[in-house]
Figure 1 (cartoon, helix red, strand yellow):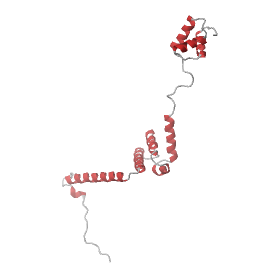
Figure 2 (cartoon, rainbow, N blue to C red; figure 1 turned 180 degrees about the horizontal axis):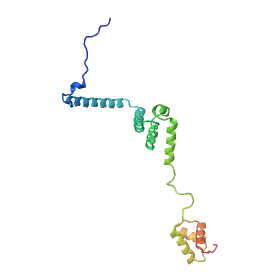
Figure 3 (cartoon, rainbow, N blue to C red; figure 1 turned 90 degrees about the horizontal axis):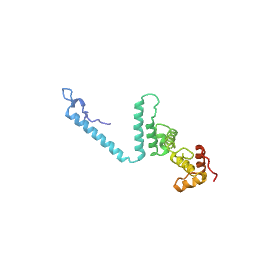
Length: 188
């Protein structure tokens, strides 16, 4: 036969901590502060004990997901560009086999986002257009001047003289410039 103890535990009521006027008591403020301090210390201890990086990443993902869901409240959440970037970056820190457990979207979606981010990065818009670069106006003026001052020179001779002066240009380009200017040169 089990006997019960006659001792009863009385929980401390928050109402006892308030004074008669309905305001906050110093004890209530102190207890709230101690509660938050202890809670923060336990949270810090939990993070320090669990040194596994994937658990930290999972926590960050869940916090971010909660933030997005709170913002959308109802319906299917729309992931903005920054949220996609954040989740794609965090996916690099978690093993791929755990993606389905950790992330709120399918692994195929994360891979698609990552492909889109890489495609945005490598658009090659900063590169030059294909083909030869345009010949500058001072060089064109120099070619015309050389042809007028030396009427016996051909386009190949002018190209050789330009090469000596430090202007690497093709003989065919010199011919095209002279032809466009209406200057006839000797074939040599």
